[in-house]
Amino acid sequence: MYSLLLVIIYIAFISLGLPDSLIGSAWPIMHRDLQVPVSYMGIITMLISGGTILSSLLSDRLTRKFGTGPVTAVSVLLTAAALFGFSVTGSFWLLCLWAIPYGLGAGAVDASLNNYVALHYASRHMSWLHCFWGVGCSVSPYIMSYALTGYSSWSLGFVIVSALQMVLTAALFLSLPLWKKAATAGAVKVRQSDPAKKESAAKVLTMGQVLKMKGVPLVLITFLAYCALESTTGIWASSYLVQHRGIDAETAAMFASLFYLGITFGRFLCGFVADRLGDRRLIRIGALTALGGALLILLPLQAHLPALAGLIVVGLGCAPVYPSIIHSTPDNFGRENSQAVIGIQMASAYVGSTFMPPLFGLLAAHVTIGLYPVYLLFFGGLMLYMSERLRRVAGKKKDAEKGTAE
Image (cartoon, rainbow, N blue to C red; front, side, top):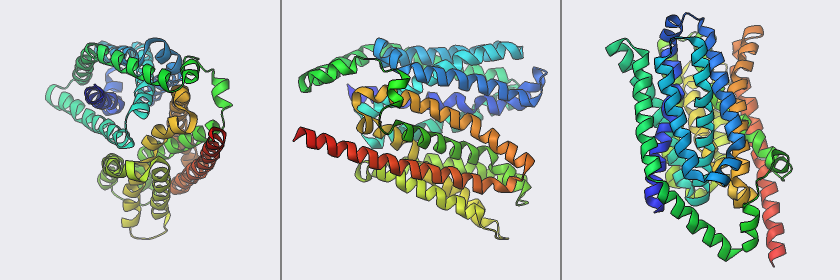
C-alpha cells in the first residue's frame, strides 16, 4: 500500500516542478503578445507566491479535515485549471486572476505531500522526491521550447503541462481509497501506542501556538535563509558573471544552469547516504559545502574557473538542506505537530525565495553587483548558525523527554 502510494507521490513531485519554470520560459514572448512591460512578470510571481503562502499556512487545517489524498488531488486540479486558464487568456489581468488558484494549489500540495513523506517514509525518499521535483523544473522549459519553436505558441506549452496535470489529477482521485486505508492504519497505530497522542493530533494549532513551540522560530529563519541563498544564487548568477567578472553571456548562462543541475544531482546522490548520515548531519554538511562554494566565488582571482566551480559547489551544498529540514520536522516537533510546522515552514520558505532576490537587486543597483558572493555568504552563515542552534534545542528536548520517560 505504502509502496504504491510512494510511486504516485514521486509522479506528483515531478508534476509539482513542471509549472515552476514554465512562466519564466514563456515570458519573453508572452509579455509582447499581452502588450505589457517585461517587468510585469513580477506581478504574476508575487500573486502566485501570495497564494502559495496562504495555502501553506492553511495546510494543517485542510489536511486534518479532509486528509492528505483529497487535499493533494484538489490542489493539483487547481493548478491544472489555472495553467489551462493561462493558455486561453489574452489579457494580462485575467492572467493575474488565474495566478491566484495556481498559487493556492501549489502551496497546499507542497506542504501536504512533504509532511506525508516526512511521517511515513525514510530520509532517502525525501531526497529523491525533491530530486524528481528538479526533473520537473528542468523538463518544462523544453516543453515550452517545443511549443514556441514548433508551433510559435506559448499557449500550447501551458496546454501540454495542464494536460499532464489533469492526468495526474485523475490518478490521484483514483488513488483516494489507498490514502484512506493508509490513514486508517496510521490512526490505529497511534491509538494503540498512545491514546493521548490521538487526541492531541486532532487539534488544529493556531499560528501563535506553533510559533511558541521551542525551536520553531529557529527552523523558520533557517528555511528563509536557505531559500534566500538558493533563489538568489540561481537568479543572479548570470548577471554577476557577465557584469562583474566579464564572462561572456553564453558561458555564464551555462554555469548558472549547472547550479540547478548541482542541486538535482546532489539530491540524487544524497538519497544513497541520507539514512546512514541522518538529517541533522546532512544539513550541516550541506551548509558548510554551500559556504565553501560562496567563498570560491568571492576569491579575488583573475581566473574565472574558481567562481564558475563555486556555483556548482553551492548547488551541491544546497541539495540536502531543504529535504533534510522537512524530513526532520516530525522528529524535532512531534508527529502530531508536523503538518502545522511544515505549513509555516513552507510559508517562510516562499517569503525567502520571493523577497530576498529582489532585495539583492536593489543592492546591486545602488551599490555594486560585486556584493553577490557576500550576500550568499551572509545567508549561508545564517542558515548554518540557526540550524546548529535548532540542533541543540532539539537535543535538549529529547534528553528531557527521555528523563521524563525513565
